[in-house]
Image (cartoon, rainbow over all chains, first blue to last red; front, side, top):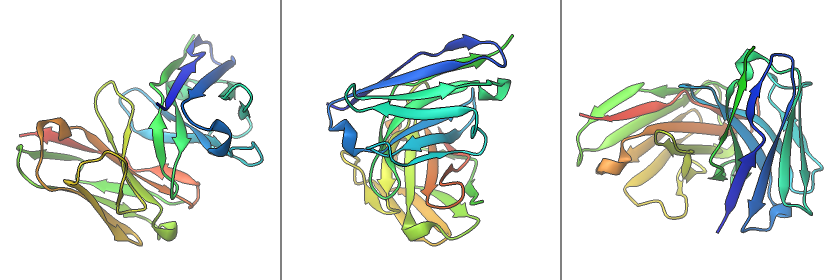
Length: 118
Length: 109
């Protein structure tokens, strides 16, 4: 059974940092693109970043470029999102998602809340 | 930048009725890389359709996707009580690489 479990969320002050982790199981982790998608309270879905299975390709949304860093450790079946210089508008539930076919995403974690507030 | 506009914003229907949800792109979607997701309150989204018309694993055949280029449709042929949720379309391959529509809320009438 595919499972994606996020951790590391919480309350952080503006300008602060946080690192999210996503532990994957039930599939050959190193062969899949992995994504981070966020959803502000009561709002829609927004893509944040994605990383290729071997880590050789990385992409970011313009809104987080230069502040967020995605990485992965295939030995630990874990993908990370390092978030620096956090702003109020980064407040959201962050989902770890597995890339699937034709640009879609099939398995989603339960989500982890990040709140940026003083 | 590819913008996906979903309509209507809210759709109120009764169980057993047919639902037609629209997703219009501001530019042609690369190779029909268009997906649909269902999200219920407090839950993560669930993939329904990928490649514009392919049902994901385990998705009932009352869900179908169609369209190409800039106009895409998700059809639910006969609504079940569990189908009332928010639906999002998503494209891949444009600029930015991944964008979602703003969602259509499907409410029980």
